[in-house]
Image 1 (tube, rainbow, N blue to C red):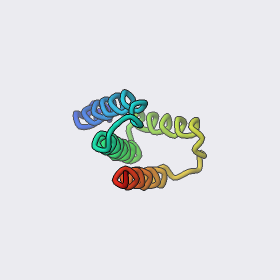
Image 2 (image 1 turned 90 degrees about the vertical axis):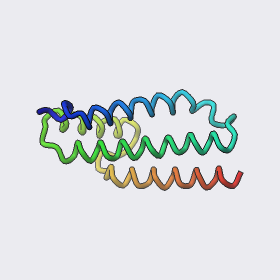
Image 3 (image 1 turned 120 degrees about the vertical axis):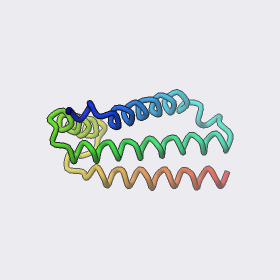
Image 4 (image 1 turned 45 degrees about the vertical axis):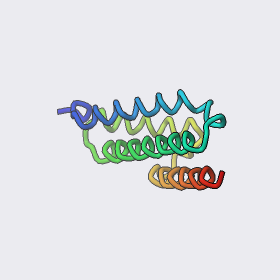
Length: 110
């Protein structure tokens, strides 16, 4: 069975896609949101990041050629966004988690 034939993987990818869509739909409204809406939006960002990290870990652990190909595409996308190819993606996930925590703290102080 292919990596992408897994019900769990397909469900997670669908959820990632839905979260991305919802976040992108509301990103330009962020500064007009009230405190509660901002916190909900940041919670969605956190949930998306966690799902992406889990998927990336699964891709990294898989021997499936399609999974390896997708992992390489993720790394190429990261490089296209200015992240050096030698960067540890897990460290980037950790940094993004800290950034989200900082955002939550800032919103709580509003």
